[in-house]
Length: 292
Image (tube, rainbow, N blue to C red; front, side, top):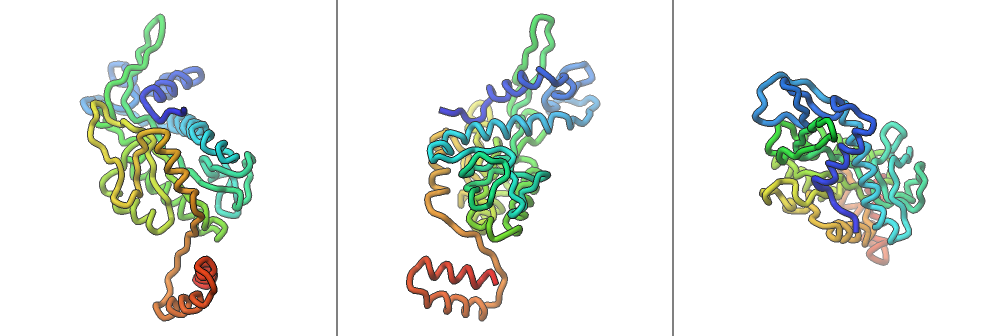
């Protein structure tokens, strides 16, 4: 069974990355020449910015997400695909889907063959120190995200806003995107200021959920949110919980719709749709008219 995000996965990232990246590309360097994944809260020395790690952890977490979702996709004879392009719904070469579950393994897809879109917003969660010994290198954990000065993953407002913006762009590109669920996949909790926002986004059908696949982001069983009131955010605590959530997501086809019409016009649309013979035809007629 696939493993969710953990400290071991972060160690794997650093070990793999050190095969081609320098310590300075992966770690901040302190005044006394120590290598930190993040500045410890106690650090008072000079600080530099570190941008080089972003693309490396981005590539690593996207590949990890593809692998994590592959078993679920295979169970349904589908495919977990990285970097999906579908111009019709705003997924371009420059802004492709990080990961998507599709009916084929092609990179360039038709909208009707895309089943779920995942926007991956993960980063290094814990703080780490690289020890450069003569015989071997070691990566030592210094503490969870409350012990360092950085905001990782979904705790960053810019990560949240980028995910929301990209999802809206997909939704407004074409009606072909309407039945495709969008999930933002992270490995941290979210800030309290976003609790109501993520629930509203889910209820509005823009984003079906912000899911963290890190069961224990804080050491010593530190308290962190499991889910928001309306499940706009959920922390997945096991692979089986993730799989159950995915099964529920695809169990019944849904349609995104949005509009701003007068009550009189909406009443007329409802009245016309209600004349159809069965429930699904009523819904189809409503969607047809509300989108005109």
